[in-house]
Length: 248
Ligand code: 6PG
Image (cartoon, rainbow, N blue to C red; front, side, top):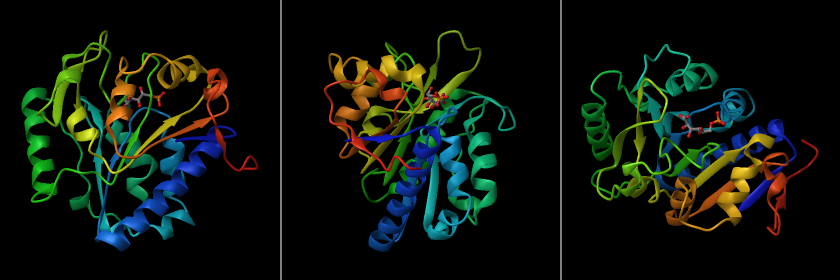
């Protein structure tokens, strides 16, 4: 499904509302809500809105478990850290016990860190299947999502849930959830904002399928929602865009 927001603020507001309502519904139904957060810059506005009333007071935080879809293997205080962004925008402002926040420490030995995180995920989901209630994802200009980059061997991973990867040109490693885990999510919410993403979004949604990481993630999951703003959707044609409340 594609949902259209007027601009970045409307996108953040809509995303925050979707997450809050999903959390409430899931906790009411199953007693807990597991979410894998996206990194990068797009989700920041969404996290900030979740950290403020009224939405902050509408989420049963005591039943929420927070993971990450990927992390850069840098210090948690490093401005490039996805954990740091989420803590400053959201986690430091809500009543969520640290025992329910599952960061991906990986500054040393990324491969061993991947195994550790995978063990933590196994422990969390056992004895049931590893199904996140919600996975938030962004879209990179090359079609990557989480830290699954085009051509990376991690895209061919069929058993492991976490992989250590390197983005070409970066001097630090990354850890990323892999397709076997991402594609089992109950719901995936992509957040895509800005004219800079128009070309790649059109390619992902209307180009040949099965080539770009974001396509591979979307193809497998139970329920995928693309929440995009008008600028990002600028080159998407022939797709029924469900317009959001334009007034936001
Ligand atoms: C990361 C993210 C990555 C991000 C996209 C979009 O750690 O970099 O997981 O997949 O979501 O690159 O990034 P922006 O939101 O900054 O455009």
